[in-house]
Structures are given as C-alpha cells and as structure tokens.
Length: 189
Image (cartoon, rainbow, N blue to C red; front, side, top):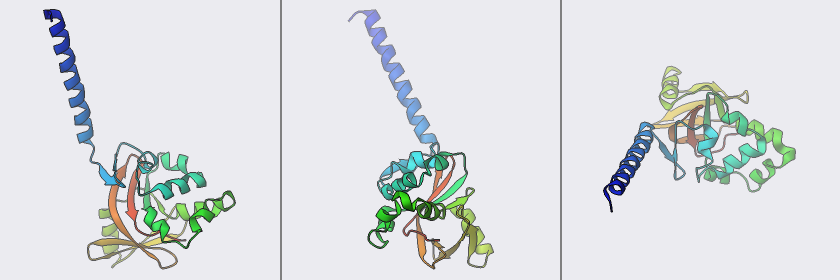
C-alpha cells in the first residue's frame, strides 16, 4: 500500500471513529427508559416511542382505530396512562375486538382519552399532589371525567370512575410532547 492510500485509509478510520463517537454521545445524552423491550427516547413523541413497545400493541392499535395518532403526535404536553397488552387482556373476552370496530369509535375514543391528562405530570408531582390532598388527588382527563391518584406503600395507583384500580408499573417515561406512565389495568370512564 502506498503512502497516499495509507493516509486515506487512516483518515477514513478516524472519521468512522469520530462519527461513531458522536452517535454514542448523542445516545448517552438521552436518558431512556425500557418499555416492552424497547428504549423510549425523550426526543421522540408519544406515538414514535409507543409503536416500539412489545407490551403496547393493543393500545397502539386502539389509538389508530380511534384516529388519535395525530393528536398524540402533536405538541401536547400530555400525560398518558398506558395500559399494557396484559391489562387489555383482563377485559371481558371480545371487548377490545368490539371497541375497535368503526361503529364503536366514539366509545373507544372516550375510553382512550380517559387515559390522558392535559399537561405533563411526572410521578414526583403526582405524589406531591396526593400528599397535599391527604392521601388522594383528583385529576381531570382529556375525556372530561376525573381520575383519583393514591399511594400504597411505594406504589402509585389510579382509580377510575367505576372504582377499578390500576398500578403504575413504570413511571416517568419522558417524551418530547409529555410523559407516559405504564399501568396494569384499563381505566373505564
């Protein structure tokens, strides 16, 4: 190999390492949280992250069926209480299949928007609200009804209008347009 070739190869190697180093530095700047086997990036919006979670396929399909993709890709900010596929599986057999039918879009939208709070509320803020509320905090959803947050031990819970409780299993999954808190039960208005 002649000198010019060696210099060219060396230059390409330096550029490769510099580029790879820059990519690593960028990835390290973002504090990701693993949800459903995928890293959730704070620089991505709610939809961009949710579609990668293996635990939220039912939720993503429901959001698409309700026509809420654009909304949840919007500026926000939103706080999304995201039920897992296992949470949807707790519903009576056929419920999900029935809800995603076009004729049930209004009911599906009502249920999904009941899982969204206008604004960005991290777990620390919700805990503080619960403490200030002597053990509970009522928060109004995008759907219009309220949810009740409460604490048991070190766990944060949310109670729906029907009296069902959902445990926050993964808190503070930050997004570019809000935050997601993963829950283990579907909430019903």
